Image (cartoon, rainbow, N blue to C red):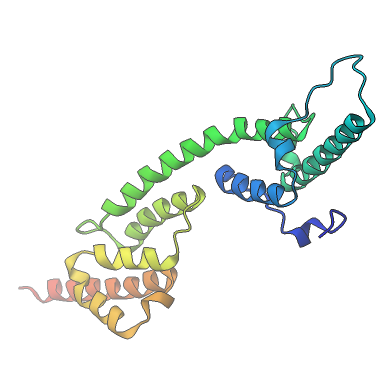
Length: 214
């Protein structure tokens, strides 16, 4: 495909905050276009007053054109709100290095945060006497934070986690759900709604039992 084609057709990676993923896809694209060397190494400096041969001039012009094309790909992959915060955009290498400096450190922090959140997700359990809605609020706070850090966190993973960590009073409910429903297709909202209904039944039975006591 020529560079005159649309960037949408090229499948241009869009930077969404996940630097590691974006840089991997972007480097692969630039390599496929044979622009990566100029992004990685930059343009060779030309000394002031230096006379270039015809061959050297053509080579220099080719490098300048590749740099412009590479920079065009980078410009179109980065939101303008981010570009405004990057001061050094002279060459494709300048722009690439600025993005790396600005976001790779953030990516490391994000990974560290994600590891901590995964530990929290592994150990979280429903507390005795805790309501269904309260437990779902706690577990979804962690799950959504993980998603914000780049973890896909599909609904089925949350559903399975909830079913494993409910208190004992929900044991027969869990068995019923696992036997009657396809867990792979069960949404978090549907599970929460079903458990709330059962929780209300528990409360009614408990209130009735208390009322019958002498």
